[in-house]
Length: 192
Image 1 (cartoon, rainbow, N blue to C red):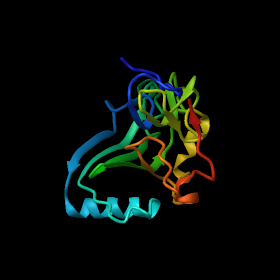
Image 2: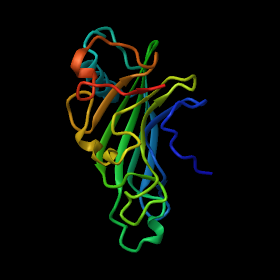
Image 3: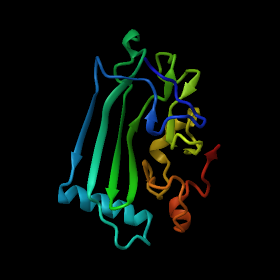
Image 4: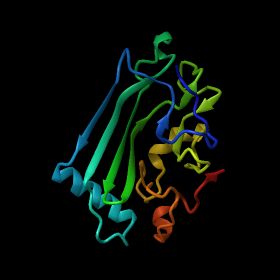
């Protein structure tokens, strides 16, 4: 059963790098792995410290890396010319001691529909959700989440590098005092 993106606070925790109706039967793949490899830890630590420079003693003990590569939207199987409309994005969950982070990368986003997509992958009742929900009334979505503008996420960022978002999630919406580096174009959108 497919659940629509909520776009409002819900009762179950969720980390949503691109909550939409992906279809992987005809093409595309979803890869995931747990890593404690030193090279992965160093890359994650570099990304996190660039966004949260005050965390000088940060460790990156465990990572879960999930990659959606060239996934199509549900409904594309009924569209003869939609085979080339795909999305590629990645989520990395990082635990370091008592701290937790997520890094979202958006490589190539060509469709945004969450349900009922037309053959172009964009016309639908809801667009993809990008954000978090702690299941207890705290919900955060990037400004383009649940809007047609989520299609442009590859050019958006909260760390001044298009297609990349870095968030501390152990205490959802924690103020990191890192100024503009941790805001999205100067704003954060919190619903709820």
